[in-house]
Length: 613
Picture (cartoon, rainbow, N blue to C red):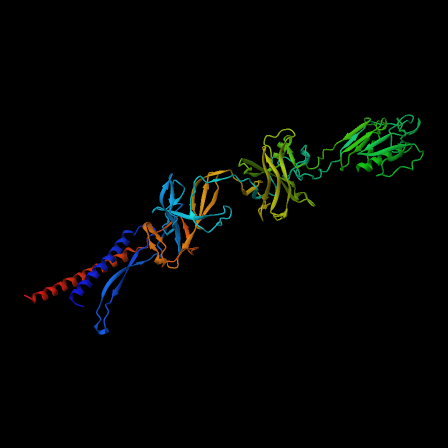
C-alpha cells in the first residue's frame, strides 16, 4: 500500500458519498410522493489481505442501497372514495398495461405490488393509480361480501347491471296507541268498541275481520203482528190458553190450524197433527216437531221461543203477538197458509234480520271504504317491487278489533290491512286483511303472534302481483303504548326489493370491498381487494411509480397479509426531511474530507517527484 493506494481509496470514498448523496436527493425529491419508501445507504469497507494483522491497513469503501419498504408512511384522509391505504403489512396486487387493442388495455400477465393507493376509475372501468398501475382483486358474493375465489384478476367495473329483485320481506316496527283516535271514535258512544277507537263489523256490508271470523253477535230484534181475537162471544183478545183450533164460540183462534199445516223457524219444521191429544208433542231437536191442533197458542209460542232463545209475548189488551229474534241468529219463519196468518202475521212468510253482520271475509269492499277509513288509522306505506322491478305503493292501515277497556274477557287486539285497489268501487275489494290478530298485554308488549314473521300470501296491488311476502316485526318491534295523538308511530318500514339499476360509481370500504352504487339506489358489493405479503419484504425490486417486483431474496407473494385497508385514505412517503437534511450535512462533510485526502496525496506525490530534480 502506498500513496497511490491512498488516492484510489479517496476516490472510492468520493464515489460512495456521491451514491449516498444521490439517495438523499431522491428521498427529498419524493418527500410528497404517495406510498414512496425512502432508500438509505449502507457503507461497506473493503479490507486488503495481509499476511499478518500488524501489516493490515484501512481499506477502500463501497456503498449499497438499503430499502425501507417495510417502514409505514403516514396515513391521511382523502376525499376520493376509491383512494385507499394499507395499515400494517401488505401490498396491493397490480399490473401495468403493455399496450392497447381497440382501446382496451393489454397486460403482460406479470403481477407487481405497490402500496400506492391513489386509484381512480378510468374510461374502461378499471381502477388505476397515479403511476398507471391497474388494481387487481377477486369477485365477491353480492349478498355476503365473501370472496368467490383467491386468484386476483384485473378489476373492471363497466356497464355493470343489477337485475330487479322482487320484494320478499317487509321489516316493520311501530307503536300502536292504546286508544286510537279515528274520525268515527270522536262521535261514538262511550263504552263501545267504536268509542274506544275500534272497528264495528256491523257497519260493513262484508265483515272485514279475518276470513272465518265468527259473525258479530246479533241483537234481539222484534216483530209484532196485528191484533188477534178468539171465537168467543163476544170475541176477545187471544191468550196463551187460546187453542189452535176449535168451534165457535170457544176460546180458539179465529182461523183454525189443521193437520198438515207447518211453520218453519230457522230451518226447524213445526208440524201440526190431529191426534186428539196434546201430550204427544215431540221434543225440540227432532225433525219435525209435532204439535196437535188441539194444543194452545202458549205451547206453540214456547216451541218458537225454544228455537230463537227468547219466547214470543202476547199483548193482553189486543192479543197481538210479538216475535223475538234472540241473539243467536236471524229469525226466519215460513209457513203454509193459513197457519202463520192465524197468529196475526203476513202469510205465508216472514223474516227478520237483526243487523249483526256476516262472518269474517277479510276484505273491505268499495262500498265500505269510507267507513273503514273512519274506523282505522294509518300504518304507513312502503314502495315494494314485483319480479319485473315495477314499483308498487303498498299502503297499510291498522284497526283495533277489541279493547281491554270494555272489561273481561276483552283484550287489546288489532288487525292489519293493505290496500289492494285504490280505485275499488261497489263490491270490488279495496283493502285486504292480512289475516293475523295482534294481541297486546296490559304492559303494551305483543303477546300474539309469538313468531317474528307473518306470511302475507298472494299480495296483489293495483293489478301488480307481489306474490308471497313475509311481514317481519322482529322482537319487540310492535308495541302498544299510550299516545297522546292516538296515531301509530312508525319506527321502521323497509323492504328488500328494488328495480333494475345501472352502475353509477364505486367506492372502497374499510374492509377492502369495492362497493358499487347503482341508479336504483342500491349499494352492492362488487369485488374484494386482495393484499399480499413477502417473507423478505425489503428485498423487493423497486420499479417505476412506487411498484415492486419479486426477487429471489424477497420470495414469492403470499396472499393474505395481516394489514388492513383504510378507505378514502392515502399513505404518504416515509421520508423524514429533517433526517435527510442531517444526512446531507454528514455526506457533504465526508465528501469534502475525501477531497482533502486527494489533495494531501497529490502534495506528497509532488514532493516525491521533486527528489529527482
